[in-house]
Length: 76
Image 1: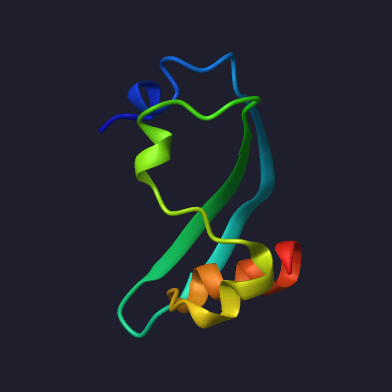
Image 2 (image 1 turned 90 degrees about the horizontal axis):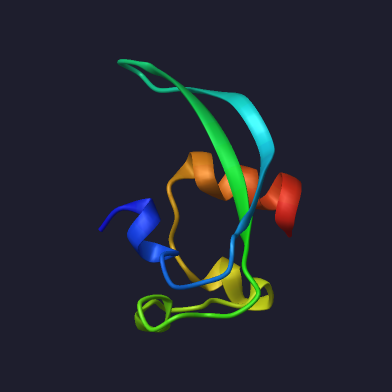
């Protein structure tokens, strides 16, 4: 599934960068990540197939350390 297909039948999504060039050091490589926020007015049939997790319960789900650190710094 491509990004365009996810939002093909919605209104134009509002896309913004929340954090760019976030450096994450692993034992064998260095990752540089950019985190985006995508806002839409209405779900479409494709997005209805995905699980929507409220921020209030996000800590009950496992995430890689890079994503978990980002969520706790910028979202939670």
